[in-house]
Image 1 (cartoon, helix red, strand yellow):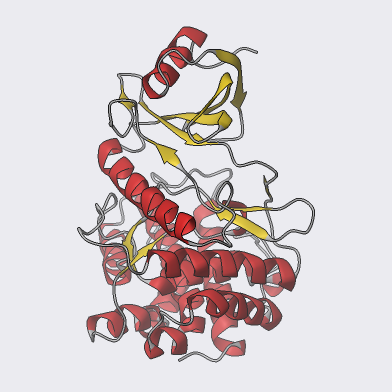
Image 2 (image 1 turned 120 degrees about the vertical axis):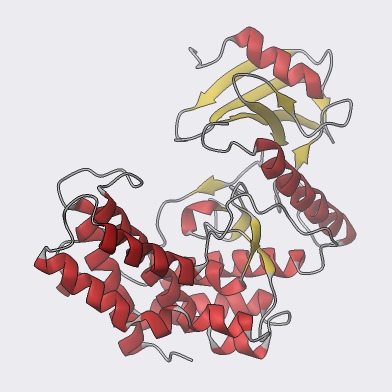
Length: 366
């Protein structure tokens, strides 16, 4: 099939990992929006008995610190590999993304086109876009809980902070206030925009509750995924049980409740993040309860009392933070988030504020 890169380029990148291994077939995965991904099949068993691999060209425009990103990814991958091999009951072929170093020990192949990396294909597993039931939500949360528990004892040094201050909620609020004052897009006087700004201001204490707990020393910095959602868990197609957490590019230092909060934000409401009718945006306690049960079943033993107490806060924090970012971008002229219609970021901000309010009303905030 036609590919974005030439077959010669793909074969050359693969050869850096397995010199001389013949490439039988290459197929491009067209589902990704950032990196270029190829399935590469070799006629020879390599890399622990595999014949099928995933070769990716990391987009260095999106990830300018590709080397730092890969240092994080490889350290996590190798730590999870050691954990898996030490557990006789582990599903070694499927329970983690197994990234491979090049034949001469490098993290990948750095070229002008991008940074090439390779990992083993995970068999008999599939990705799904949305959790439709509490059981599916519970399974996804358990997968991310296990991910955090397995990484809790990863030795120093600290991971590279590839996106500095990514979940610094206080800074996000400060950026919103600056955008409002500077009023670059001339939108600060719009009544609805001002109303939303006042709404986010009123919920600022809840938005900062997790960060302040961390600053008081009540919860530790952890290794977090930072894009925790159902589509980033591969599941077994036969019974739906979670197989592996994927898409590690945003892994870096963070707080456990950022990941749990992402799960809540993406699963607790039965409405898209840009739903214009806020009456349809209602937090579902049954989904929260399933998420909490799944997450605690795997990570409960490593969480502090504050982390467990503030679990429901995590969802409100992440929802408010994303809403603040939408409204900031609206005030700045829609430069960051891609918009599909006029006032799209305003609609997004309104829906996130409505979801956070619903969470605060129906869930036991700590």
